[in-house]
Length: 55
Length: 470
Image (cartoon, rainbow over all chains, first blue to last red):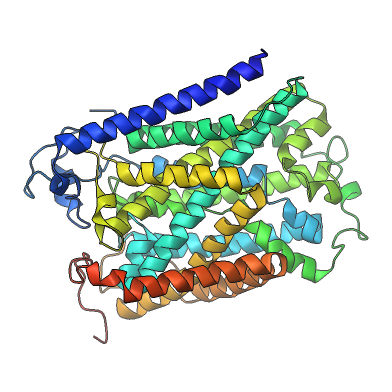
């Protein structure tokens, strides 16, 4: 097996792992927070929130 | 808290989850230039096929003028309407919901199709190198998938890291253009560069002036996507300052990059080859015979494609997210990740769509749909700014930037857009008609079905005075 075949298989493997991680995190997040909270972002309200954000 | 994430903290609005304001002007520059710069490495050169190398130079200037108008107009409006969704939010407040819905679709299509084109380009380049190095049976699909999935993952994890990466990648790609320009001794024509031999009176405009008009379609590649800076409006610390500054600095960078690219490529490659190659800068590096330049321009091309796809994922997801937030689409899409503060459902939702197009569409089809959506969008902007100035004249609301010579830029933009649409019609008439028909059908769906779910009063959020005449 050439190095390029190896890269090709590694690309598939990394992609699948990352997709699985995102799906896992997505499900975990959706279970941990209510739908109302997750979709609570409103256009125009961000100013007050960002003022309180500490970096 | 330097990684762009924050714990969910109570605010005066309660436990709300919003996008984070963590970006600065450099990120805005990285977003805009990052999306566009791939166009210098591939795409613009097809205008030489339509009208010769001189036509490619003319459309560089004329389409540069079009995009300078876009950048100026966009900077003024978005410094006032600082919301995710960019031009969608502008259209909603200035024109109305149906226009806004269409603009958001233009944005999502333009960015998703450009992302697909970028991934195909990166995959093809890597496959080509594999084949040149003796590998047999290597397919581009795994590299396309890797490119899209890794960038989606990066976008999922936070906007600050995403655009920090884009800044570095874009700067390296831009640097490769500067390096090849100075490496070929541009100050002494005839030593390496042979512009006089490549462009002669007999081949300067091989198809006459209609070739220049036809070249407009591909001249768009020089700058396509710079308006994407406005999608970051809700995530920059100081939108009124950062967005105009980042957008205008980005436009200047692109004008310089485009001029350097044309000069090097037109001086090294005959127009017949320049007009058909997929990698003009890489081919120019091959002509010089320098292994270092070949290496540099190969990676410059790959990095520019990666930066562009990265920015497109960022922008497409924000436009989709905004549609969900206003109930133009199911509100399910408007979820923000409580830890990473990204529109994670919109980001992941668009991934399989991009992958599907990457597998079934070829590069030409994907980029044509992107360009079509982009030009329809720019045509809207010329009308939008006139309505904006009429309804809220200068002095009536606070603007972070006021563009000069109004309404000349709006008029110029409209005329140049009409010429570009005509050029697209010459080359891709059936796709243009199909795309317009698609937008008409979805507009009917929105007007007669979807709009009943929209909370009409809630969608207008800017604390502006009543428009003049109302």
